[in-house]
Length: 392
Image (cartoon, rainbow, N blue to C red):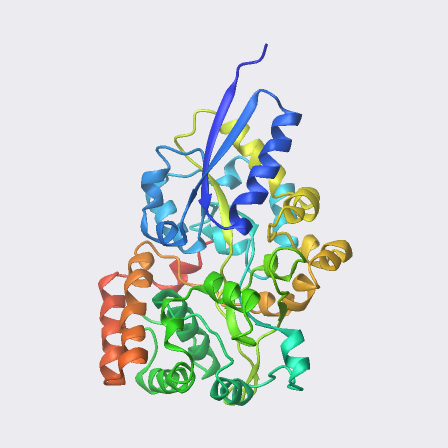
């Protein structure tokens, strides 16, 4: 009898992040009965707050965010996968990356995770309600503002999501954030961004300041209160029949008049890492390679509620048929999504910088002081140069 191997994994507690891992692990156990993989869930807040460099001591497989890879490189607490997986496999992952999902886990010349999941903020709407009221899907920022005036727009406004949208609007005004070590963006751009954000969030229900993307999707798919969301991290689950009371349609983000083009949202998604403390590294790597392969991502993984990182799944006809064309409709937004910084220390900035943004949008104040608070937090994280951030 082969030795019984138990691997423990940790992920986040939504159907998109948990169910496909459990289903795939069950099948993997049927193929390799000596390997038993169990998964623990944590909330999105715990996912953001608890240091992964502590979790690696207790878990073999970890679902991570790409901004964490600078810490991974500094601490070496997860395996550099390029030293263990074949070049052919990694080249396939690169070739079929959805946007920069695969590359976002490269840092300092190494691959710290595989892009098991891909996401970026996209637009969602209730097609039935828009048709019922004879209203077209918004196509521009002005259209979004007009619908917000009707009280029918839902948009996440917890600090982390506001910060991601701050990046998006910096780009829309022609200034990509984090181009130097002193400021996230210049004052002129920052003031324009805060004005644009204020114009939207002053018009939406204040309950949005307690809503993350999941909460928005739940409200839109369970009530008729909100008809449209201009940008929130997409969840294909809500575009699948039977998942929620009402089906959501997903599409690309609107055009922004000042930019003359569509908004570029901020890349999300998750990666699968293997702990450097894992006692059964070969088996953990075997599972990681298997579950992020094109064959599993396009079938077992997506069929159980997953949102694959592999582009073949996003372009698969059957996958799109079963998800109301979620993947093919939102792929353009993912292809253009902005990659956040990944230097060791960025996560502290991300945890803190959304707070003055939210306070300003809720209570008003001096926008110049808001920018200075954000820049002070940035300087405190002691970022490395943009060239070092690029890694890979």
